[in-house]
Image (cartoon, rainbow, N blue to C red; front, top):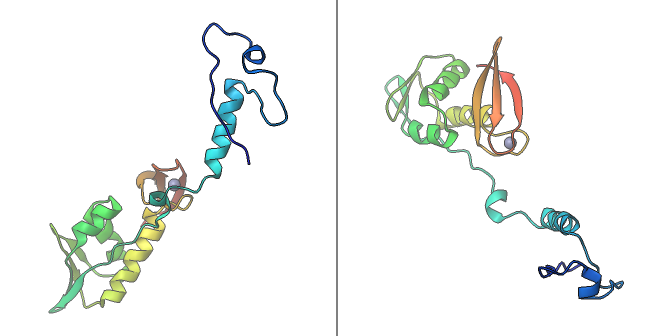
Length: 167
Ligand SMILES: [Zn+2]
């Protein structure tokens, strides 16, 4: 085990050996940059803070069938978690379910009858492909258009950029 104890050389002292005594096998004198490098290494080996390792939980759609339509009640909440517009999610669901989907203020109105499971599978896939960074698994991403049917996903947490097929 190595302990790093920071004892700066007092001002006006120029010779660390004269001040601290000669280094031994147990006590070594490091320059500032050596000390910083060891400190960085020590931090990199420490367990990550709990908040960073908690997996992002993909929100679940809360839906019900009304007549020939399926209503998703909490699209605003899902969109907020994804940091996307409700219309960006409704466009995906419309394509995946092959029916018109209308994004209203808080709700999504899907033409046709779909079970909560039908919808949640798509919501989950949307998050996996388009929201959660494939490098660091954080949801802090945004889209940049990359043209030719491609979307670029840019991760604000780790800086990763990669292309996915537009939907
Ligand atoms: Zn990332």
